[in-house]
Length: 493
Image 1 (cartoon, one colour):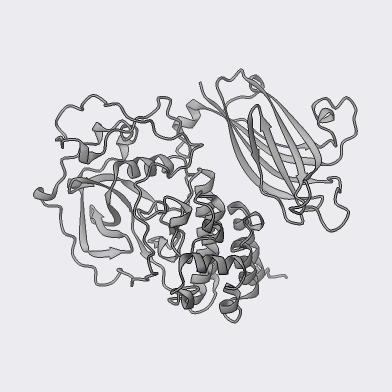
Image 2: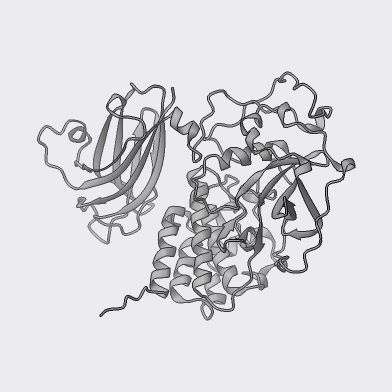
């Protein structure tokens, strides 16, 4: 039986002050056995920092015991070593926890690690607030927000390498293949690798008006693919939609999606996908919370001998003339979507204006799994690529945060792409000038963006990746901007 501990390091209070000049920047290092995790540091967090950083630890049985050491440290200047502020020790005995137990506690902080492990009357210096929840695999399997598959899935050969089989034929025996990556590995490692193409920004008009009639999938275009051939798709058989159930109109495209319908209900269809992309998307959706801000998944199917994914209907964004409550809602919903993806260990790599849709209920949703996701940092399109992609190919969550800052600039400048005047620069020249501060969004936004929004953009697009906030912090920053620009008024009698 698999048991998970969902541990969120929330905040601290009353910590020791270890920095003589200025305000300390606390962060936490969590250690369990040979595994080490860390939070982002809270810039100028002082003695009362806030992190809201979630972690997941797996255990084999409900009888396991463990010790999680938390070292609260101060991020000093690059030429100085980080010093410790205090220590917390969590002694975990799963036999004292029931399935779905949830506890929020303030834990004592001690100046020495030995005191944290064995307090014995030692004086504490501060407290650390944590949220802990234990989930058994039986709950995880039935909970739509998290799915744990006990048997390792195998990736079969690509459809092009296998002869087509009719849905009525018996599923063939599994061929040897490499296992799908574990959740701890980079989530898009097995996605099909498109050739890097710098795509100019394009804002298509809304297809809500003048929609052409749906074109049924004719028998000659129906696929002979059978999802039962693929072990990785079998767990999601409930999401399979036979090609006969839905139709598409290829003359109506919305960015990289095609307009379609199921039983007269409009949908969006993502065509011509690799089986690995479909498996990765379905697996990622199974880890999202019920109230996620991604385009809602309708199911998966096949069309013209390739795979496809069906989403709820939505229309592309229309550029606002000024920063309004609606613009604020777009920013908030998109920030929440990015944070939810990151909690599911998914890096988007293609955050931009054309990836956000307004659904039929009026909510703004991010297309979380586009086909043009960058396989490495050096293939992220400009101007959404962060400066660190000039020297590193490793994808990080902070790169999505940077792209979100550019997305906010898109909301402001409209059809004029941010940094449009530098589009003739080479990739290396452009990124180096951004890193050196020669190119700055502030130059073109200072007279167009409200100051709180401009401040948020500065933080998200900070060339120093260590100073860039985490996605969960960005959600809080967006809420703070909304409260500043559109304060709630209360009538008094």
